[in-house]
Amino acid sequence: MKLKTRLSAVLILLLALLPAGARAQILYGNPVIGLNCPDPSVLDDRERSGYFYAYTTQTSFESAMKRDSSPVIAGAGIVNLPIYRSKDLVNWEFVGDGFPNGHPDWVKNANLWAPDINYINGKYVLYYALGKWGGIFSSACGVAVADSPEGPFEDYDRLVDFRTVGTLNSIDPNYFSDHSGSYLLWGSLGGGIYGIELTEDGLFLKPGAKKKLLSALNTEGAFLYERDGWYYLFASAGSCCRGERSTYHIIVGRSENPLGPFVGPDGQSMLKLNYRNTIMQSSRDRVFIGPGHNSEIITDDEGNDWMLYHSYNAGDGYTSRQLNLDQIKWNYNGWPYFEAGEPSGSNKRPVFGDVKPKPKAAKPEIKQEIPVKPKRAADTATGLTGDTGDKKVITVAAEPVKTVEPVKTSEPVKTSKNAVKEEPLKAAEPVKVAEPVKATEPVKVTEPVTAAEPVKDTGTVNVTEPVKVTVTEPEVVTTPPDDVFVQLPGGWSQQRSVYPDELEMFNKLTKNSGLILTPLSVSTQVVAGLNYKFICRCEDATHRSIGKCLITIYKPLDGSAEITDMTLLK
Image (cartoon, rainbow, N blue to C red; front, top):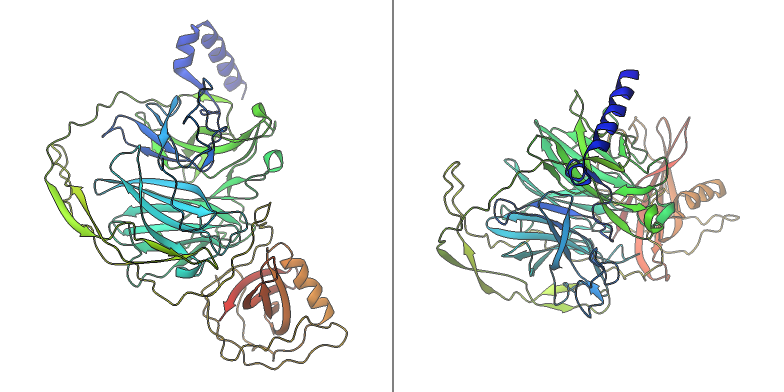
C-alpha cells in the first residue's frame, strides 16, 4: 500500500511538470458532456464515418446547448433525439436532431426516451421508447431507420407495448445480436426487464417468439453484452430522476444464454428484488449522484473497455443528468467492475488512433417492396393505435466485399409481420402524474390470462363482517423463478374473505404500485411459510376500472412478506 501511494505521488508530480496541453492528452475529467444527456447509447461508426456517435433522451432546448452556449436549433422548443459525435469518447460536439420534424407520435402526449442505436444490414436502426410519467399501460417501444448516423430517422413500426405483449412500462429498449439470434430487451420499474427474439433484420418480433422475464420488477435500462461465452446483463435500479435524492445505481448478472437465467457472483438471481451485485453507485463525496442507464461498451486500441452513463453532478446543483465516461474492468473470474465502484472525477483517457473511413464502393441498388412506417389511426380512448398496412418502396444498398474479411451477402429484408396478433386488452390509460411510478416493492406482471369464473365485484371488503365469496380458482399461466419461493406439497385453501391482518399486509405491500387495488378474496397455502393469492379489483389513479387481478404474496417463517406475482385477469 505504501509503495502504491508513493507511486501515485510520483505520477502526480510528473504530470505537474508536463505542459497543460500534454496533460490534457493524458487525462480527462467527468462529465464529458456537461449537458442534460439521459439514457445514452453509443455507436462506434469510425469504420464508416470516422466518428463515435452518442444518442440521448429527448431534452429541452435550454438543456441541449453547446459548450459555447450557442443554440443547438434556433427557435426549437425541444430536441427530440439529441445526437453528438466524437473521435475519442472525451470531446463531443452536437450534430443535430435525429427527428428534426418531430418524433413519432403514435402514443399520444409521450416523449422520446432511451434511444438504442445499431448498424444492421447497411442501415442505421434506432430502437426508441415513447413514454410518459405514470403511463405504464401506454408506454411502448418502436423502431426507426436512417441512411446516416445523423439521421433523419424514419419511423418504421411499433414493436412492444402492453397491448401486444402484455408488459407494463414498456420502455428502455436494447438490441442484441450474435450467432444465437437477434433479441430485443426492454422494460422498466413496475414491470421488470424482458427479452424476446426478433427477426434477423431486427425490425419485427420473430413469429412464435415468447417474451421472458430476465430481471426484477425494480430494474430498467437493460444492456446485454457477450464476453468469453458469457452473456452479461447490465441494468439500473433505484430512483433515476430526483436530483440529489436519486438512488440510481448499476447492477450486473450473467448467464450462459442470452435470455438467462441471470445470476450474480454469489448465485443470487437477478429476479430478486434485493439483488446485491452493484458495480456503480453514487460517489461517497456526493459529487456524482444516481449514476446509471449505461451505454454499450467500447474497446480502445489498448484493449481497455469503456462505458458511458448518465449522472447528476454537484457542479450544476444536481439539475441535469450529464454524460460520464469510465473504464470498466474485469476480474479473474470474468466479472465486470469499476475501479472505485463510483464515478471518477478524472482518469487516464482512452487510446484511439486515427481510423480512416473505408472508401465507399459503388453499390448496386436493390429495390424491395416492404412495409415501412404504416399509417396509424389513433385510438382516442387510450392513445394507442393500429396499422392501415400501407407499403412503400425503399432502397437498400448492398455491402461491398471487404478485402480482409469476407462479409455476409446482403439478404432481402423480411416482410413478415410481428407474430403477436392477439386481441388487445382494453386498458384505460392512467393519467399523468408528477412523479414516476415508485418501485420500492413493485408488482410483478406476467402473461394476462383468463379466469375460469371471475369473482363478482362485491366492492371493498368489510373487515368487520367479511364478505363470503366463492369462486373457481383462475388458471394462472406463470412459472415463478425457483428462488422466489419453494413449492412444497400442499394445496391451496378455498377463496375466502380477507382478514384484517391480511388486509393490513396487502395494503402495506401495494401502496406504491401506482394502482388502486381492492382485495376481494384470498386463498392460502402453507409452504415453508404462507403463500397468499388475493383476487382484487384493479383501478388506475382516476378510479377507472382496469379489471381484476391476481396478486401472490409470500411470507416466510423467518422474514418479511413480499409480492412475488401479479397477473391481470380478463
